[in-house]
Image 1 (spheres, rainbow, N blue to C red):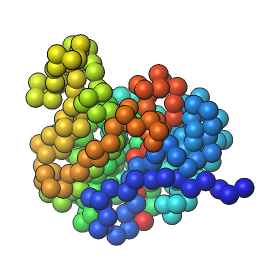
Image 2: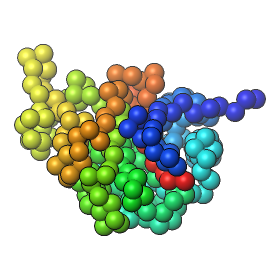
Image 3: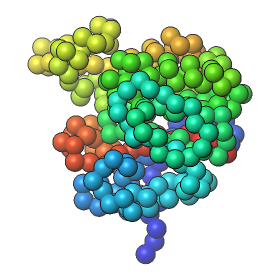
Image 4: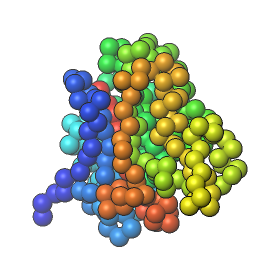
Length: 250
């Protein structure tokens, strides 16, 4: 039987950079079945762990990384970021940064945004999980701050925001909307509740932390609206896999 080939997204913002592997998975091109079909990379799902490991192997192989060089997180929707120097699974955090080549930083999402960052001159990378709670906690700025501690300069950084839930589909309660700057909260007579522009808020946070606007890119794709291509926790009532944002220096 022919081995599946992961269907991956490679952001334009990173294409000129040598020795960088960065992008985002889709749900296509893996071993999983049922609710997790087919490239489920989530370690916190009810999928068979051996199947998830096989999917990790597929991803690592395509990106020219070893299986034992992956950095994964057991995410908790926090603003906590950790500097790492070795592979492994890190609990109770939502962001990682490193200046170590050969590590592939991975962020699991299924409607939340994966934010990927690199300073190609300092050779420092970062990745964080920015759902609504992480965004309110300004985890992107914290990731940038910790990259600076490793020698990165925001003026040299490039940032990418992954496919995630769009404003049109991100309906929230008033108690959630109250946490956001009103400029990112939208209301319509056709919407019974407010909607939040998650990508716009993350982009603003990156700019405020010193990243030039022309060095920030956000995918236009919506995970909720494109379930044929992406896992979506909201669209699939929680019975779904996880996509991965990934970034690593060879």
